Length: 206
Image: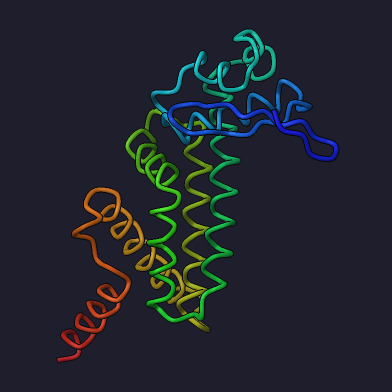
């Protein structure tokens, strides 16, 4: 147990990772924190109610009392986790010098550092037809991400140009992430991708 002013923290090991929990959190907050840890360590589809209860240090009955079902708890935790991660990624991208290579380098660093969240997103993409309760949230997040990427890469682009540019950037981002998740040794680096885009642009101009 660790103590900080106004807080008591407990170190809990789950799925090979260590997580700090505030012992003064209520059961609801503890369950959200535990579910986020399980999403990080186990993934969406393989997480069970017992996994969450163990991670949160509360009873199984507390899940039903506060959320009605394990899926509802996981969905709420997922939406919070993805919103937090999205804000962090946006902040990281905006902190670069704005060059294409710096932006792609930041994306690659995010895939390496936040691998479980990237993996969870692709896991959900394959399940989205069976998860209507989070489909709308994912659609909204994708559209927001597309608009933000257009703003970062497109300068003054707006309207249809912004939609096209943001969609292209999002497609490249997803493909780059897949490469780094599956085959990091063979994946394109930020410099590789920047050079490839220049080659593609030169080829289309001839």
